Length: 95
Image 1 (cartoon, rainbow, N blue to C red):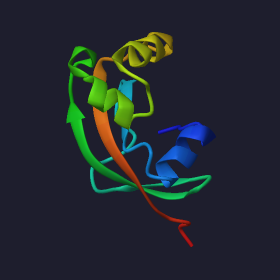
Image 2: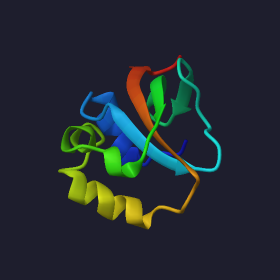
Image 3: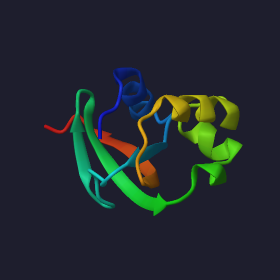
């Protein structure tokens, strides 16, 4: 799962706790970890869902102002048959 540095920094600060992905197959698993430029992330619960089910609360937890901003972002993403809500958190520098 590729994440922009600004998103990684926000996850590290605890400001972002969710990510959304539309893909052919997941690249992370619940309970797993992800090594990134800012350190190790924990992957929490992963739920299959429809983009239409994303709420303003979910959108804010993912770093968006609201669902409208989330939908604009989603429109820039490539299509994929699977849409998932992914809980993320910062574990440390990974050393």
